[in-house]
Amino acid sequence: MQSRMPYNQYQLSEIVKSLQENHISPLKFTYFAGGASRFMAVNSHPKYGIPQIETRLLRNKIINVFQDMAKPSTLNVLDIGCGDGRKAKEVLSCLTQWSIVKYLPIDISAGMLTNAIRTVRGNDQLGSIEIQDIESDFEEIDEIKSNQIRKHKKYQNSLLLFLGNILGNVQSPEKVLNGVIKLMDPGDHMLVGIDLWNQDKIQEIRQQYEFREMFDLVFTTLEYLGAKQGDGEFDVLVDQDDHEVKIMFKFNRVWEYTLPFQIHYRTITAHFEKGDSVQLASSYRFSKRKLAEIMRNIHLPDSQTYEDDAGTFLLINFIK
Image 1 (cartoon, rainbow, N blue to C red):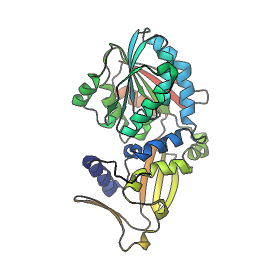
Image 2 (image 1 turned 90 degrees about the vertical axis):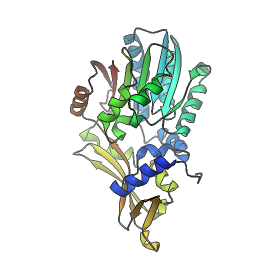
Image 3 (image 1 turned 120 degrees about the horizontal axis):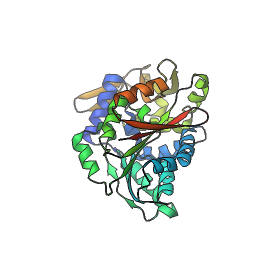
Image 4 (image 1 turned 180 degrees about the vertical axis):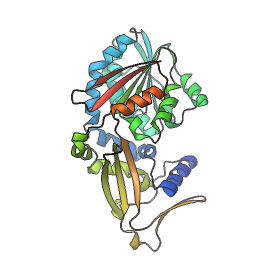
């Protein structure tokens, strides 16, 4: 992986402060630079079956969503946290049969935006689609940022994609969802992909995160900051009470250094002794009760849900 630091001063400050105060490496910075290609390796790995489940559900249900939108002849598709664009490609391949579409991938990582555009452009049917990428942190959408992004809409109708259980990977799901809703105008639809909690599949859930390519991905930020995987060991924890999966890294070779392993940025220092752990990733899986609570609090008047046959994944179609 390239060694050049991919983070600006504000991002570095946020990363080191989070490591110092909470021993948490913010997941959103994992996808920068070399992390973007590592994400693609994870997304196509047979152990990580979540994207395949979601893609099948999208393929089967996108026509229902399009019909609910009254089959508009022109459409903006905003892909929030676009990843490598594979899921958007499925959606766009369907929608462009009936509509003229402008595709707007949104991500904090320029590398992920590049991958998404390459994926969409690589489809013969989508080679000439209009694309405008937006490099932005969707976890921090306020009125000013929402107005800036909404200016890039070209058509009256919009479909927002918020897929891949992104809502389960952020610290404050309701805050982030309320921010994303600011991008919607009356009549817009938003598809949100949700991993569901299943008490009977604990070991299966663990295995979806416990493989080398996943560990390489979530270690990306610490690697750019100077740590090495040989400095410690990975562990995958499944919290059955909180319905949360965490990937941890425990330092166990710090004794080889003359000082504890330290990360500095300006006046902020995060240091780790032997035995200290860092949370590299956290993924919350929603119960239907928790989802109902969130939906009551976000003040959107209408929604529809589509669930896979195994009850492991849910698509929610929010309508403003």
